[in-house]
Image (cartoon, rainbow, N blue to C red; front, side, top):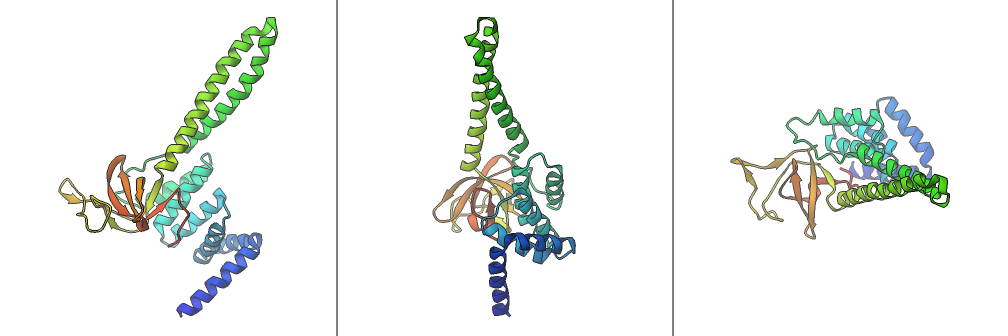
Length: 247
């Protein structure tokens, strides 16, 4: 049986990679017919083959949620929102997936709409500022030139803020817990479980955390609810800044 499933999986991978557009349409048709498992398999092959789009992450998240894979659903839907922060459908789907995780701590939101708006505002003020700077060459329009200097400076501040924020995201990416795991006080299974308020700290599938550090022995130092917590195995996480490893 396992050999048969493996053979079908290999055939599916070869077929999807050889004709992505056709298989993308097929996956959309399968999802519309309610066959979320097979549609999700096709979407996942496209994703692992390097195909990237907010809509693909959204479709993967919807299929994962329909198949009961809550952690993968939140991971992909959050990626979709991060890529298209103004899409209300993506945001509603993410909120719906999060509602299936009772007792989860408040996720550390990376404010994708705010950073997107600041970036656009930065480029707009940069372009307006440089156009206004031309007024310095004309006596009657020197006020416009001064305004251009102010706008150009403001644009550099805004763009630098966005760049610093995105650099921080790469250093300390968000992650989704893919399976139940205990948080330990050190980077290894030999360390005791972290105790807070008299209870062991345990993460559950679908919880969203922040990865503050990673060690070569495949353990991650995490932040839970905005506070530094402890160490968990990397295998228990879907990390935004790393290649996706399917369930």
